[in-house]
Picture 1 (tube, rainbow, N blue to C red):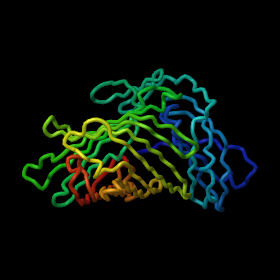
Picture 2: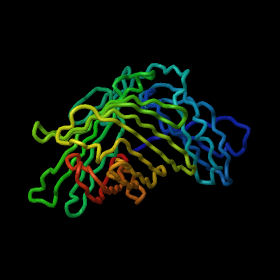
Picture 3: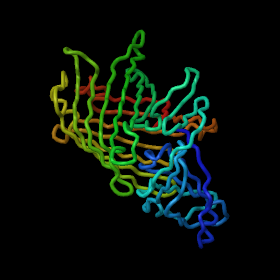
Picture 4: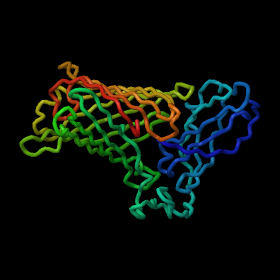
Length: 356
């Protein structure tokens, strides 16, 4: 993912150390996106370590031209002194009392989103298109990987979207779609072996400075008909706890639980293999390596699965900031493809990712 930053004026402080820290902000797309947090970086341009004394609030501007006031998430400021040449990452979010000003009118340029009275406009070789582009965001990783033998290729597309342009309670409503494709490259003509379609709708609410809670509904299907349909319909409860580890490292812990409803097609007794819950854990360094694992299963039947992801920005190899990651993925257990819910597999693949 490619980021752009805005330099901020230094905030007056009595600390000589803070004068060494130059703030940079990653501008949010809109006021709605600032609700989930904004990254602010304090870069130490001095020759001595500098203590972090962050301003409580910052005035900034979103990419759609809206003026915002963002407030510090206090827990992210508990970091060690910044070494010379180093930086600290802090998290801010839209202040509750903020009242965004009307967005300014800008002229759309080729392949560049802009805003006219809140509407996003993009111009490309296809022509000019308008919509709610700023309300789309990454969801599950988007990648393409390939392995040896029957592992074949695996391609995943995923996004989330906020249906309503709102900074109030309606901003917590989200819909998402994920599609995972398994490509049998080891077979003649390389057919698509299986596809899993996964739409969902949920309410995602911040709870405190570093915790989010989601409740929603997810449908997983192989797209089959009456004779070969495999379906899972689940209501779920999911939480995420983020922990700032310092030095731009972050830990995320994501437990979730669910119960099944409706018809399961040919996937009778799928709960024996999928269970009723999962746990995701990831650790990452901004612009560095990320390792993540997702495990699910049924402790009664002792059946389940685990999937490991590893990613690293391509730009760290000196090829420029192309917004792509070197990506590895490995799976062991039941149900990598939905149609394989009662079959155990072990596969490892490597490739590229656009989100992680």
